[in-house]
Image 1 (tube, helix red, strand yellow):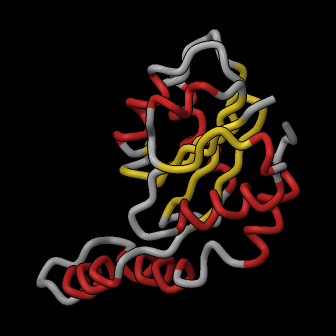
Image 2: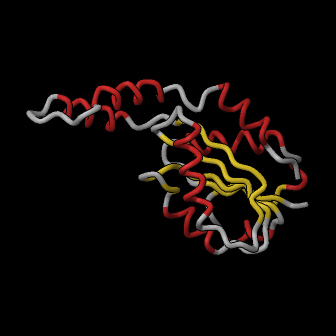
Length: 165
């Protein structure tokens, strides 16, 4: 069975997960590896990776998923805010709404991912503003925790969740 690994990655987090998936699947069955492209649809199984944008997958991936028909799909993604499986499950549920019913979701995986330094700088400015945002200290703390992710533990959990093709 041929597979493709399709992903979108701005900070490199989702690319890191895509590379981990590639490392555990048989190379001879690989049809395509990279950003959304028509050629990826020539595979029977798609591993589709996204970064989280306002609690949903990024637009490039949502557009791609809407065009997928009759495939097995394994979803994987990263989110700057994280640490809670409940939060990740909400994101995955929203992503699955973009998937046509002719497809079968064979697995999912999400983990926290580091964010650009500009995000922390924005949080610090917000904290020091005359009207600070509620929970801003927790947002800064979350940013600092995310710096190391995806980490080795995240990668190991992903590799353990991969459905072989």
